[in-house]
View 1 (cartoon, rainbow, N blue to C red):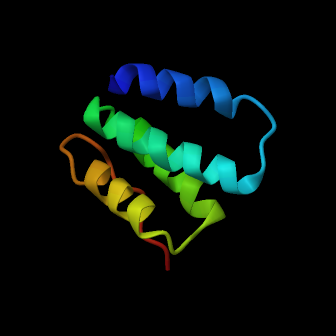
View 2: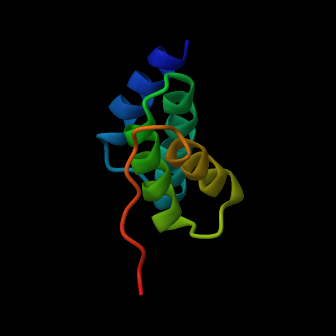
Amino acid sequence: FADQAAAEYGRILRRMLPVNLTFALYANRAAALLKLERWTEAVDDATHALRERPTDVKARLRRAAARGRPRLPRPPARG
């Protein structure tokens, strides 16, 4: 089911959509990608969602969960 969900979210995201819908699609696809163990893509989608809503807890948790997986390099620290 998660693979179908991720594919459908991707298909919809190729359209021009309102920001609030784009946020939800990226955040939900990040969840589907986590279930598929596609860590790098989950980080990317959660990061896209956080650009729209930087304080969203679910998107932050999804990105942290994906980053916590082995073999995924973390970006260099800012500062």
